[in-house]
Image 1 (cartoon, chains in turn green, yellow):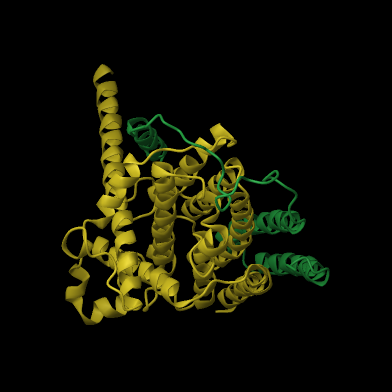
Image 2: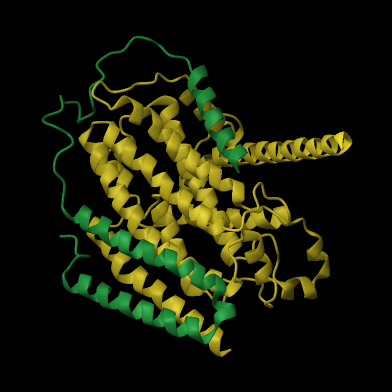
Length: 107
Length: 342
């Protein structure tokens, strides 16, 4: 695995080094429909993105909890089943709350 | 004692050599596949729209991908004036590195896998989320409004669909009881249909939608929406760096197809019921079956691209959060209940 990772990066670096470079450089201005860019490109953006990011953290951690559970489900049986249904139930309460608060509405 | 050490070092060197050869083979084959995936994409979509597709370079345009590659290689490399240079340079590398290293854990046929690790699926999911870094960094570093918006949209989209995709694979883990991809393929052989696709059709649907969104393909290609964001996060990239993003996208498609084939379609095996009725089919090498399945799945990508229009962004978000995640949770609960009672 490490070998393949190294292989990938090394190939990329070689690709980078061997490329022809023509040193003349015209205007290296960012593209904005052919006009000169107006204002700062990294402006404020919608707060929705932050909400999505926070929700992602919650749900992703929960998904990570589910992986080991799925692996040992065969061995534990009923206990695991009840436990996980409780877990998902609690999660769904939070999910419904987020839905009611319109966290998923993008408008 | 010295002999023993010599034998051991010999073994280690031999093992490393084998891994290197395997890596080279996989890498070479994957690159060839990527090149011709672009060709077939243009060809198939062309024919679906009653066009011919590429025709000029070579017989029926067969040399087109090579010409494209050479062209990208010799193009001038432009780094915009206000760009955040180190990040700008690293971003395509990360995008590509993440997708290519996921090829390492994919078993192409029985016993042929570069790294047979126990957490195969987790590794693949981790790598696919690493790929998002490349996109976000590219969007941020280019210092262009278009790429900034593209990067933002893409990160939100990838992040939302990743949850649904990860949850849909929990069903597979429940059925197989393992995260190792080889084990998953073998677990499917105990059913007469030889595929998790049948009991896990819901998970397959969720996974497919998630895979399309993760690789930024139509109908979820909002980050690169050509007509509004002029290609989104990689507007400012040119030449080889642009080609890296392209490569990352196509390797990503191949990886997603492979995951889907392994987890839902039985990998390199044919359904036992078919092999039992027609024993001679069991003689087909696994790699051919695997590749055929992957091609079918890739064809689905092209087909959908030629057929469906692009989603609107708010619809995209509500599909991910309001439909796919509840469905995935439902699938987990249903699978565990069924598995418990039967």
